[in-house]
Amino acid sequence: MLDITKLCIFLLVVSTVAAFGVGYVNSMTAPVIHKQAEQAKVNSFREVYPQGDEVKDETAKYLKKDSSPLLKEVNMAYKGGAPAGVIYTVEPKGFSGPITILAGFDIASRKLTAIKVLNQTETPGLGAKAKDPLFQDQYKGKGTETDLEVSKTPPTKDNQIQAITASTITSKAVTSGINAAREHFAGNFK
Amino acid sequence: MSLLNEFTKGIIKENPLFRLVLGTCPALAITTSVDNGLGMGAAFTAVLLGSNIVISAMRKIIPDSIRIPVYIVIIAAFVTMIDLLMHAFSPDLYKALGIFIPLIVVNCIIIGRAEAFANRNSVVPSIFDALGMGVGFTLALVLMCTFREVLGAGTFLGVRLFPETKAAIMMILPPGGFVTFGCILGFLNKLQAKNA
Image (cartoon, rainbow over the protein chains, first blue to last red):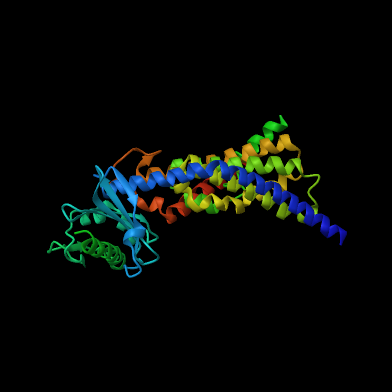
């Protein structure tokens, strides 16, 4: 009985010292990590909507209970104090998990500026190609009046996106996310 | 002389990856580019150095019956610290190594050295043991990375050697890891058989 108490206390002491060590390193690195995450976010906002000079999170203002569940965040890009673009974070369900995508819209021209796949867990070599420029760049400059469609053959109409070969589910998932953002954009920013 | 021995044995005679065949899981997974190999080797060496020092310093007071849980706590603490430091100060590498940093906790080389060496030797030889094993593991990783990156991507440390279309992409995919590992092991075994 005495022996086991001794062992417990020893392990407890070792764990406590280790916990303090980890806690100290965490308090040292947490601000740096947080700053990097913020910076990475700002950089990816720039990629989908380059014109703005300030981006504000206005999710609470624009996302209501009846908004599409695919929409996660709404960020407004301001230029000279006036709203110029909208950057949506959408999260459709892909072939093997959620795909997080940023989509930028320009208010003046009413067009998609660009999309960027932030996080995905699709099959490498197939669905993971969604993050390649070859696929993503198809969305650049698309109109916002009608829903985008996925086509397995080279697109013939302006609202068509060519699917990634052998990854129709991923292609459709990305497009459904963009469509949810498009619909919200068309309805809220006139 | 014996300290030098502790250091050099990890590089060739008892190379953890090619001679002891430990830590093969991360070695197969991350050896797709040379900078990954260097980063993983550095993180691994830092953890091994820390755990070897602490465990050898405490070897007389750690009760024998619970030594494994104590080792795991110590190793896990070091890994978490390295994980946080890399996340903060070298985010690109952190992203590339991904899950394999936390998995250093269960890397059998580290617990193996704790049990086989640090537990029985004082601090100074343990430091040399850790450095030798660390350098040996890093060199082994870099060797595998060199083959795979050059053949699979046509680059070395990101510098292009020949056009991508001529590269055999299989070499940076999982099968390439097994092929490279098997070839190197086979070659070393043959070399050893000749010497014996």
